[in-house]
Image (cartoon, rainbow, N blue to C red; front, side):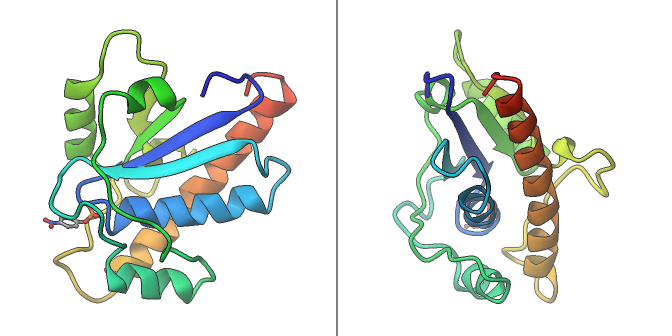
Length: 166
Ligand code: 4NP
């Protein structure tokens, strides 16, 4: 987005049905309840194409719903070169996603490309672990990490907005 009063954020994982839609739903919710409401475009995408058009994994939806986040409106899509011109922030869930994005990164990209958890001042880890084949607390762990990093991102955007740098 080129309007200087706006920011655009893209979350990226592998399948776009577990981690990045969770981050998407959480951050969308936090922005909607902040002074930046209406000023931040939020999307998510996957590096893979297996789940195109699908809603988030039922386990991700259930875990998010238990914390008050709606994910059912989201549909999986694949990241593309145009995203690097549309988004100010492209936030990867793990190093594999980041490597894929770095390989795709076109000349004249507008996007700041980095690991999502690197936004945390003291990250407990650098990657949001893939919960797809795991069981147990995998989805709660994803929520914990995405909530914390979303808070850090929102603070960053609020500072930028206050300084006229959004
Ligand atoms: P996500 O999880 O990258 O967090 O959406 C995955 C979902 C599906 C697959 C891998 C990871 N898959 O191999 O189909």
